[in-house]
Image (cartoon, rainbow, N blue to C red):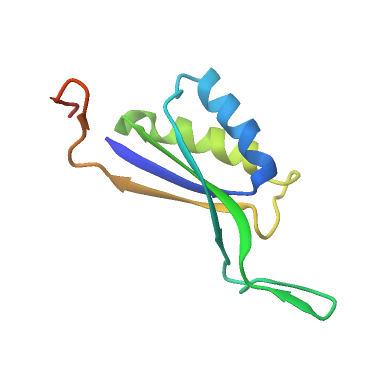
Length: 108
């Protein structure tokens, strides 16, 4: 299994979550984050913003479902046809073990 972590523009998260759910990926964790990318923030006039508000979603998928989930995220998180700086980033990491607390059962 793999954990997909995606940092997204806040205004795009609703679209991404809706499409993930419709595609069979309903289990998602979401939280507010702040940060900056390679461009080191944004300068508007004389004001420099180096902590840009974003949202992170995390979901765990079977290895064979990774590409489908990533395509859904990219399609719904991208700004316009070509995308734009600040659209976000996706990280994929292996999950070695997972447990359901209520039943004390191992998931993997």
